[in-house]
Length: 115
Length: 110
Image (tube, rainbow over all chains, first blue to last red; front, side, top):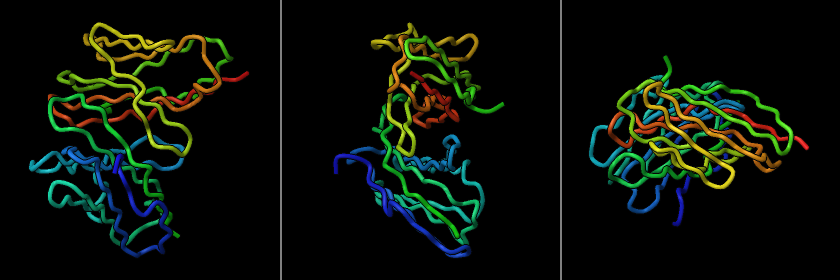
């Protein structure tokens, strides 16, 4: 597709359930980011993938959160045993490989509500 | 100190006003700087890059101060449509690992 694609766009889940959020970056983009944004708050960095390098996981808030990127393209963010405080929009973004400073393009986000 | 810090605002200004936002960053090795705009319940989108020499795009002017480690965004002749949250973005060192500030909320009123 032309842009970053995320699914599902909306997810309501019960507390304690696991959820998987998918991100399909722009074709050819080797850098992929996951951010979280709670209502009315700023972007919280979660994880960054760049090519075949080890991902920067420093932003993952707990061990219930994990992410992988298969084949250098699609990424899945998994939240295990969801809690109400996990409710937020999860934004995926991608950018071209290369020197620092390439524009980051965001998907429309996956809106997660934990009830 | 946070990697990227912004005054959250809100900034409430009348139409036609000039408003400026600052953003400080902690990593002296950062090389790339941007301003993004985020409308309510929408994803962030690039507003403009910030170049060392400063740059202007219409009513918007961005500047970088490396010595004091901050970037700024100036909006002249504010329009109602400028109402949004403005996010500064800085790369972590010499790579593509970009970090966002929490954003500054601007409301332009008639």
